[in-house]
Image (cartoon, rainbow over all chains, first blue to last red; front, side, top):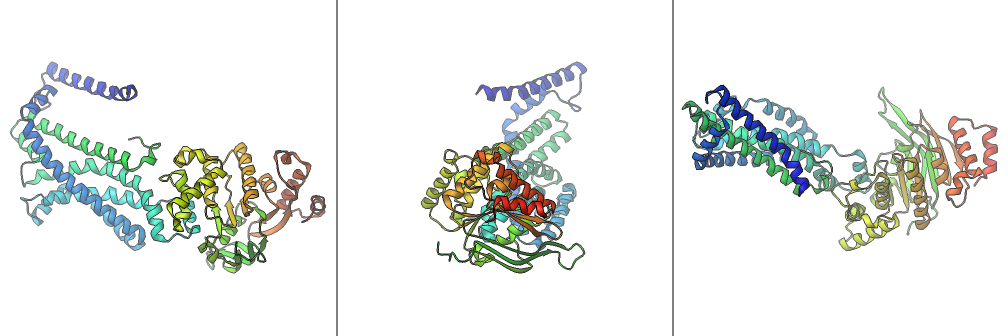
Length: 256
Length: 274
């Protein structure tokens, strides 16, 4: 337990010092809230409007979670097919890279037109597209990057390709999948949030940040930003927990 | 087992292996290679890199096909021998699976054969006893040292009790002390199990210490240039300082240099032909 505490207190201390400096800087220089609100102002806004912030956070988190799950499924499924069929691999890889290069900002208004703007669908789709790439790339690599000696061993043991997939390729890809998910999980929150900037239902964090800022309620805007950070962190930590559960054998190499 | 003892453990006849045939980067890895390995015999393949020793092992294992010639293992084609699991294989990398415990790594060949959970667990524990790693059955491979990992790989190669072991520089990545310990261990296992062994190495003392015959190969094109018989009887640590050991080492070294003149045959006469 004391070992854990020793791990935890340095970052906590750094955060406290940082927040203290921030508060002091704002007070001493009399910085206006529209430039940079003091942490105390953000905290006040957060506690005054807690249920509002929580509702907005839940709304955006749900969009992100939906997009993340669909993106994980689709990315993994296409990676599985691509690893078995070189043709699919050659087709899917540039396509995936192309999708990853699509600016989410340009895409959202188009998807809003294509699908019902009053629904969650366009936002979930944006999230799926963002999540797809890191998952597809990582899982494909995990399925293909098996030690040559391990593949020779399986051949010497007369194992069929489907058993090689089940016994070697898929377990080999699990840490890669989780690495992809560690990138994709916080990204899904950002994608869901940014997608809300382009109209549609107003109850999400992105919409609330935009409208608060437009109403010069900067403290409130920052309170939503803090909530967005918290949701992103929560997604990341959930992935870390999943990794610990799913890959007990990688305990030695795990860091972040 | 049921294999007729009249056919050798391995019989290569006029084996050629040509990579990229007909292309500008064509490489003849094996040229007209003929070799018999008798039942219970320990044969080392030695030679500089590119001499085709690993390729020869892979043709025996049916991991790659001979371009020309016939390769028979335990009296059947190499492909049939692989399908019927008539050999076990160990590589320079232990090639263990991190997501399986040590015991379940050893069980893998049995699992692929459809052996029941109880039986394969029992067999794996016997083999881990043999390589003195029973205490580590439930550890993960990466918790073990390099030498211990190789012992797990050897236990795995013995899982289906094949008559033949194919080993591709299994101790190549180990330090000298561990390596010598592993050599003794392998000789003990061989004595206990009576397996035929084909062992690829680039260490002359290792080849001499372990084997009944050292097959010396040379590159471009890969072929057998000499076969040095080694008659050292039962090995133990004193063998490494025995005069006959050094004579055999010298004979192999000379053969590798291509000095197959009088000195060499003289040496062979003293070691004693089989």
